[in-house]
Amino acid sequence: MPKINGNEIRPGNVLEHDGGLWAAVKVGHVKPGKGGAFAQVEMKNLRDGRKLNERFRSDDKVERVRLEQKDQQFLYETDGRLVVMDMDTFEQIELDAEILGDRRPFLQDGMTVTVEYYGEEALNMTLPQKVICKVVETEPVVKGQTAANSFKPALLDNGVRVLVPPFVGQDEDIVVNTETFEYSERA
Image 1 (cartoon, rainbow, N blue to C red):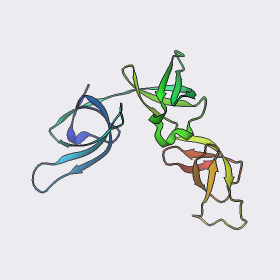
Image 2 (image 1 turned 60 degrees about the horizontal axis):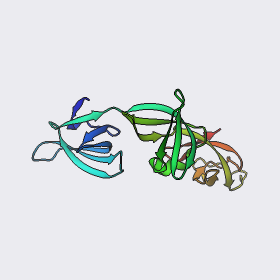
Image 3 (image 1 turned 120 degrees about the vertical axis):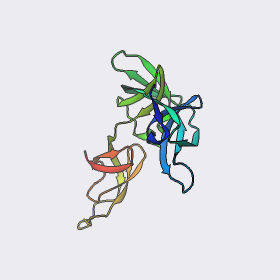
Image 4 (image 1 turned 90 degrees about the vertical axis):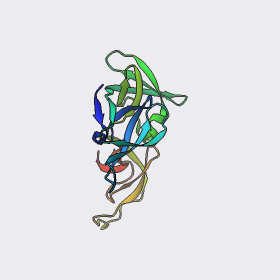
């Protein structure tokens, strides 16, 4: 595995540190008036979700880990576990439903997701950036209400509330960004 200097750590990097695998969430570079510069790194453990704040000087060496990414198909959820299938080998694995956090409602049956592996161990799952959802409840369209920045609340079929433009009505399909939970466009 390649070693990188402490000042080369970027958000999203996966590091081997203190015997665990950590994802860099936030990285701030600090140059104090006295002493050497360092990177203040907020990290999240990929196995148990613990958080850690660590300082790395520019001459510190850290192991950067590359995770293998595989596209897999989501099949179903059972007892708080998500079952996904490798589309090439048809092998099925289970992941903890908490791995998706607040993006969980956007997971749909048959959806292709990206699972990140470290060796044989599945550590992370990411959803497609945009998904199609149906608006089940929103205020009716008011004629003449087309101000540029006016948005109205809408309830989606998965229970998530988002803000939509005034022209979007009930029972319409819209595209939602799964990272920002924002309306993107009509489907």
